[in-house]
Length: 105
Image 1 (cartoon, rainbow, N blue to C red):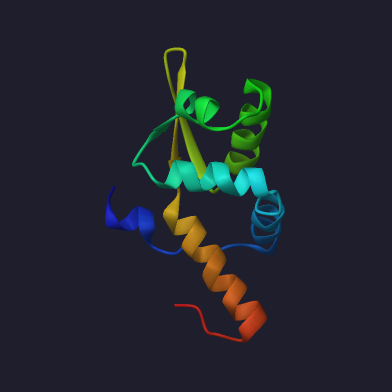
Image 2: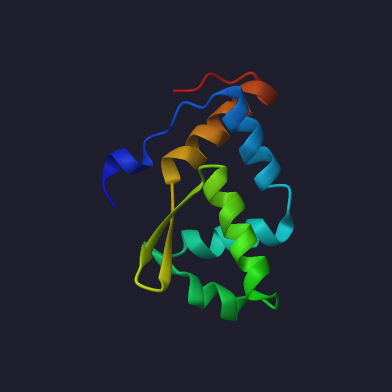
């Protein structure tokens, strides 16, 4: 992964709210954690790691992509997911700024 991919992203208010909503679901956070443990996570491994249906995992991935936290790449019939670390860093910086008055950088 290149360094630019992990630079904090600047978020709009709408992006911040989308991410906050995406992270409000404990299963979705666990899916995000699993994706973040690998450079690129095949969705099949997520389906076997969580005791939920294929449709439920697909929904969680869709919401994480919609929030901008995950990038999904299709290779044939397989989907591979990658954590967008820069977006996550941007969210945590903005959260600290809003809650604790810290300056982002």
